[in-house]
Image 1 (cartoon, rainbow, N blue to C red):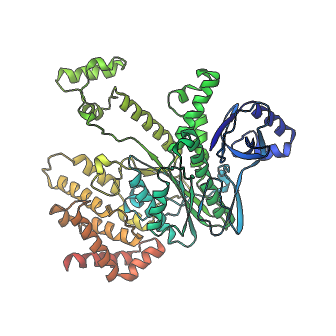
Image 2: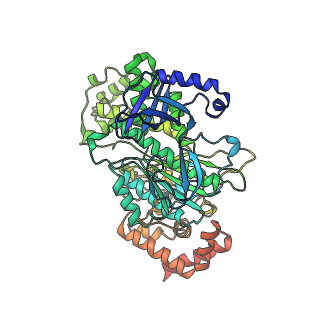
Image 3: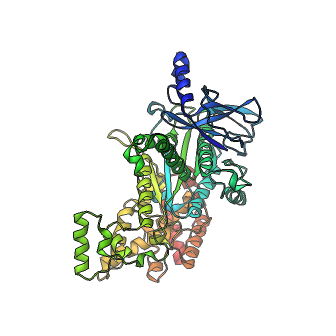
Length: 563
């Protein structure tokens, strides 16, 4: 795997493009996605790569060849006028970044780095893509054609969510799932898990190659391959959506390598032209306009296409953040001198703490939002700043917080997790299922009220009721890892919480995440489905909850608790 930079070649190719107006209309001055003709060091034949990033006047090229490509300034490296494409067809299983092995029956072809859809080509998001995870479908629902970030410190938890997503959508005949694996370390484990879940036959996997010799590929080369893998997965999904009119779900596991490559391109610019060659935002870890364009080229490929034959591409992209607590760092004690570089307002607040004999520990400083003066914390702040930048480019995020919600699965933070969709005065755009919407209206307020009461002395009936309400919602949304719920099952648990059927259980000390709580919820779902099979079938088919269906399910729920 090789990553090369071209300088004079870029200028030569630009001149060539200008001579061919028709080609320029097709490709413009943006080289990303174009084929690159590279010299073969073993013989006189040539091989090819693809431009994966461009930071003028440098183009960064990824090639699947194992042999090194030497820095070439004699014009032998040529950026071509054509885009690198993959073939899409039947019986695709596990392919690499360039869509190999080739399909036997091809029915579509798509550029790996296709441009993001035009606004005129896409429709509003108004249909749900159910994930099989109640917590997600309620707090951060994913709409058809939407992109969603999954943020957390534990990739296994995010993979449990995406595995459920693939399971839920694999049952929909017209939906194709594509799973992009960008890490060599996790490649085999992810494929094995998909196989154990029975998802291998129904899912197209785009994966980085196995690396038998860890020393043979640099981190930059791995990042270049990872970026190509993610784009190829999107290209396959776009072909299903545009050529066959199907819905496609793409799981990108994960996009951390995108940051590694971007940082490497910044270092390359600095090494060649000095620190002034890059803008301040890139030097300080922020998001320049160039960096936003780099990420948006992937994130914004999600779309719900217009037309009778228009399908959709829905993206779920994982990104990791460091753990908040490591090595008991919360007990580390700081001195006022450690904040010599802080602003006057922060120093004044610190002086007040010292005067009141409050120790300047990491946990205390976090509570009052004062930056911690440590290298580890500084790195964490940079990562969180980067995540904030990604959030600003996305349609929503699912934020997992082990510290606050470790007892539940998944540990979704309801304050940080949300779906953002475009709405207007004359338009209606929703990502959630109508059946869920009719049950959980006001759930965020009730969860926030319960959170505000946590740790406080509950002296009134109203305060106790608020806390009980929040616990009931969490008990209804919690589920055993590895289990995928139907929409009807989700509605049964939510109805039980909304009608107060779980109050006595909560009063007896049962909480979300407990073995007893999960056993009761499972028995409740099984009972309601056996007592009201027509109602559950109606919910799963229509995705809605009529008054009659709701009444039938509520009667089934009551019959469970009174039996």
